[in-house]
Amino acid sequence: MLELAGEIADGVIGAFWSVEYVKNVVMPRLEMGAKRAGRSLDNFEVSLGMPTLCTNDAEAFKLHRGQVMQYSTATKSSPAYELSVSAAGFADELESLKANVANKDYGAALDGISDDMVDRLTITGDVANVKRRVAEYHAAGVTLLQANTTPPGAYFPFYEGHLDGAPFPEFDFPGFLEAIETFITSMSS
Image (tube, rainbow, N blue to C red; front, side, top):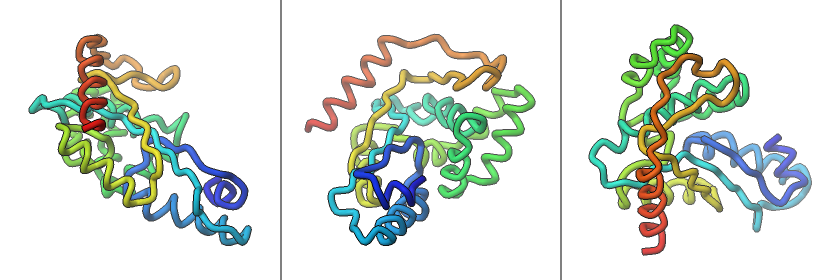
């Protein structure tokens, strides 16, 4: 798909791509397709939607672990998410995460997600960290980053049977609004 997009399209829209996946898979494949068609990627849009939580809460990474669990284990709807997680250097953690989710041990699944894993697979943290992560994606080749702002602690199934029986947190609407406001304010300053 990426090669075909590079060959014939004006852009591509991705989701949950790690910086490493963008650098080592997305951009090289887009370039292969563009080269095959005798064109360049000048003015080619690489758009990426990422789970985003911009907050000053000291527990930001802990509050966003559920998003990593949600995306990383959505193998029936988006098997390429696993490739993104592995490209970021978390292949072993992914296998443990998938095993815990398969056993419906969601507490162990969440506990096995480190702050580093959250940082490298989402846009999370205070304003300075969010800006750092956005800059890393731009440097890797992403031209448009879509902040999929999520409420603190939230996660949900992507399809029937995904995260079956998980204790889904209540939707924190005030926290969600605060996360959106913090993100918008941080990006406009």
